Image 1 (cartoon, one colour):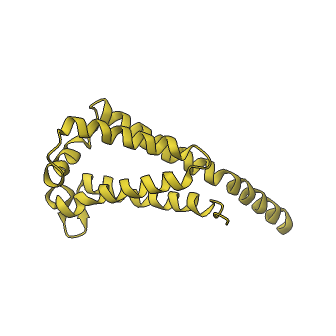
Image 2 (tube, one colour):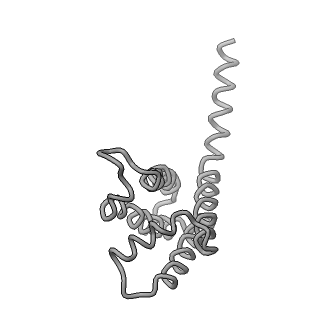
Length: 148
């Protein structure tokens, strides 16, 4: 009985190991393309937060133009994660994006915090990016090192 459980356990682990990176890539693709498309279509609930951060930090450029490029940038991140060999590019773009998405927690505390360590819904939306970063680490850990 115990050996049957061990065999079953080993089989499940092997299957999960084969699925982990493809599922991680697909998850990032779905989230980034979907959310980017919603922004591009003007239907994203994150729009006001992005606009508030834009006004607080960037300015000087038309927000509608910036928002289109930001939407496309998110979609590109998702697409690049699907292309083998572009993991380093994808991870760089993702790191840049994640850095910018954390900024409202600092620059817009009235919109992202309702109390000490109690995020608003917008704050929770931002904090969940920890999961995206963790998935990206898994993908990055499977990249073959550059050889001389």
